[in-house]
Image 1 (cartoon, rainbow, N blue to C red):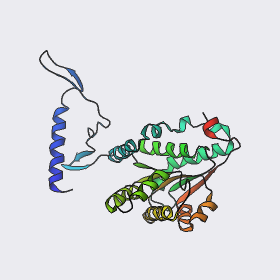
Image 2 (cartoon, rainbow, N blue to C red):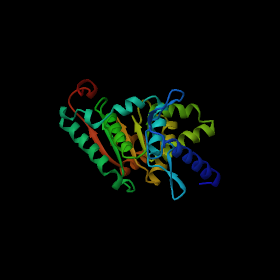
Image 3 (cartoon, helix red, strand yellow):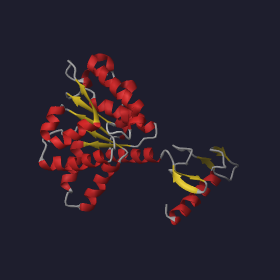
Image 4 (spheres, rainbow, N blue to C red):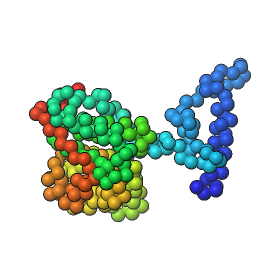
Length: 259
């Protein structure tokens, strides 16, 4: 960390330490103010840095705070937070239950898998089978365990990138966010008509994450054969990276019957 940044962090940290010598909720005498403060992380007082041996280092909450900010800007933060394992109805069909178990075990084993080649998971199956819910449930659990997750709505992001493809600064900034996320959640991969530009963008993104062993959580309506037929290079990388879980069941739509 540059010396100027280090000095700034130490100054802010000192100010916060002095401020927090006051009680968190304290009513003072008549001509004084009421002080009340709440933090998401009391360890760093929401600075996302802490001092260790006079060195400013990232707090364990930093990636979570960054991921929450990205989700807030995406407009789906509340929906993201509401998708949990404990409100997923896995009793409606055996294959839905099997998919639930795979998702749950992936979450529990994530940190031991993270640096492995097969460190990712992909849910495939019909519309409304619960693929996105399971993907988001995993992400919520990981974030609560201090693992940063970035959500990518495939069709929305692809459209935006193609509209701004001539703007190199914008394109590289957005792609960098998804390329370098600790965990990337791709929702509804290859949803809608898939063009050559779509394939090129997704290959750039997934190829980077493949070679850097960065995990992905993917939901897709296609099965493995269909994904391979769209693009073999993308499909083969996903198969090598991911535990592939098919979510099939007899009822028409989890969203209708799964509540």
